[in-house]
Image (cartoon, rainbow, N blue to C red; front, side, top):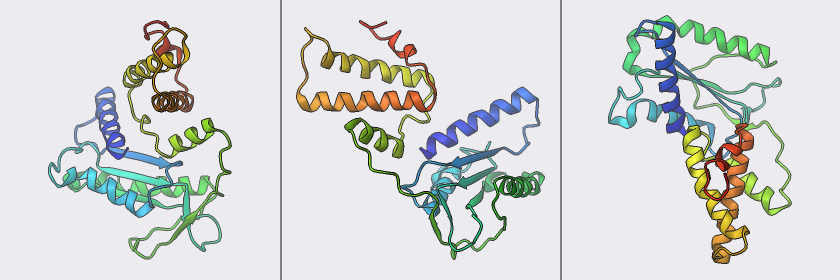
Length: 227
């Protein structure tokens, strides 16, 4: 997931610089608003983004287009603060530290304005080790049907989230072809275990299309025996 976020941000920053005719030394900022992933503790999420941003210790210039990551987490808040205070962390890429002074003040202004617009308090600190968090949302009610169970599990681990449309279509064609073998009369039937797996993949595909408002007909039109 984190790898996909950084790859997309790298492409978008490079593309924006070209389209706007910006100087190559213009700092690039990736804004990540996490409103859904609750399974990874916030501190671990920060560590993973930082580790990936600096090239996993192998290639420090791998994501040199990204000077800063601004990570805002809405699924947790600071404990015992009265008015809601959501954690927002600025992760810097030391590969281009010489140009960071151009935007550091702007990032702080953006976070302050965003917090006030959302009705949150705003404070800054470099002492993050002492911070403690608690969930901001009540636990979801338990899903009732098998489809709801699959949808709920997929939203927690949305592995197709950062796929390009063509990747989604290619995967969708395979999923639809397999589900046809379950549904159509006259086709060789899979085992019960395989049939359940195909149904799971199909529900996940539909859920991903729903979340990103992707037209499922684009998949059907390219699937043999369907389109």
